[in-house]
Image (cartoon, rainbow, N blue to C red; front, side):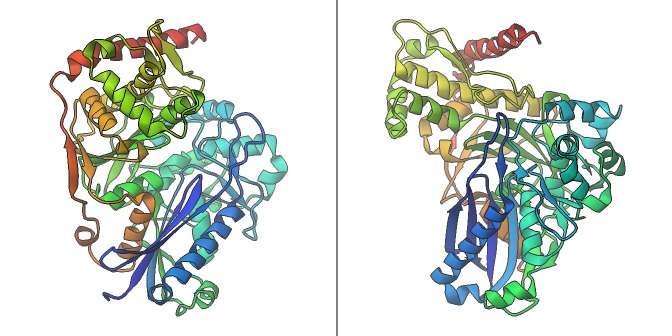
Length: 497
């Protein structure tokens, strides 16, 4: 029905976003509720799942206040969320400890042990055992908090915990499941051998559905509290945040992709078959739609590297002005050619190194170099990280044919053109405001509740601007990219690796 509305939740690391849209996907109301992160020890990163839930309730209250009549026509809910986080529940569904997040680095030992536990572990999981993934976190809890593990009966990912609170159902979906390291990504099912290697079995995880599939119904209790008819609201399987963002921008067919320049950087490509290159730290997982997969190259410090540098030099509130100065600096080819080199591994790096201990590096600084030259090096260094991601995708034969440029860093046209030149690939800037994972979640809610077909719902935005690679890019950046890569190798050698 054309008057129905749909709700998308995005369970992010810094905030919970909620988006209410109509059948034409016009935004009716939205809310953004911040949440806090706890870092009680070095390498730890945790959040309270109850804070997520209370933020969701606040977001719904905001939507109901802003669009009360439209909210009563709610027909479908979709969920997007940060990946890999571990929420441990007891037999009554109570949270046993804070959720261990994707950016928590405590379980390096467990990741190594897990990968070594099976001779065919990497082939089974389609991924190497990275510190950020879920299974090593559970092994850490079993080793260091045995009393907590003994009480654990269910393990859910962040968005799936919110679905449990919405419906009372333990359900998980394909795109997020690959990051647990318990999932047969090719077969789209739980792998009993991988589960056993991680010290658990199928009783600990929820039943698996596709992201666009109906997974549960909103509980009658919440329907009454929110002024809705009982058993009237379908909850979709949903997706991990990157897969949801891809659905939200219409990257749903093989060869389509997104380059996200957010706090971290992600190069995401949809494939029609499972594509892997695990030993180059390429993540391979299911897409949120049936019979499709995706690969991801991940750069841990992207736009955040420039923010860090601007804060360090006391210009954190004037990043835009700094970028304008960098653009003027870069207009002189000789200044660009002799600028410092920066390796932005400020929190380690994932693709292509899987090296949580990697460090940031400034090199080639001379007396004539000031803050603007160094800021140029930071922006260029981030672009070089994406060059590595593109190289890994090409090595894996991922078949990327088109790519949208999204995220906060995409606001800079100078940076966008630099990225296209460095990776030697055209990038399309979408027309219209970005709503990211929440938009994709709402679309999955529409699909799950029968609001239309994939072709009707997962449409692409128009292209505001296409960044065509400059033919002089290789001559401008080739030698500097080689020096960038050599700097990492040298730093790694100094660490005795």
